[in-house]
Image (cartoon, rainbow, N blue to C red; front, side):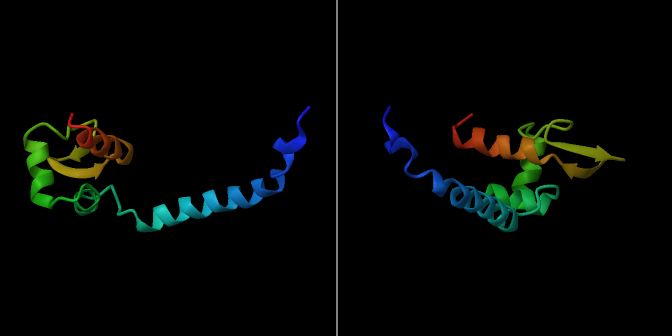
Amino acid sequence: MNLDAFNNLELIPELLKTVQDLKILVNILKPELSTKRGVAMFLGTTERTVNNYIADGKLIEGKHFNRKNGKILVFIEDAVIEFKINRGKGR
């Protein structure tokens, strides 16, 4: 059995801490995706463009955002992230 594979096991806790630190940093730098302003910043667009995405059916009520009394109440973070990924792929 080759024991060389076990030589760097002591690095695992340090790697885990680095990953956790990166997750914290991403949450600090990521705009609030529940608001139109935050979604616009995240997508690299303007709030007007977000409105156009809604009007054009690119952002879908019930999937990307929810309304109450005709007003956007909240955007759905996971769906907005998925929209950005797919938009980058040309979908």
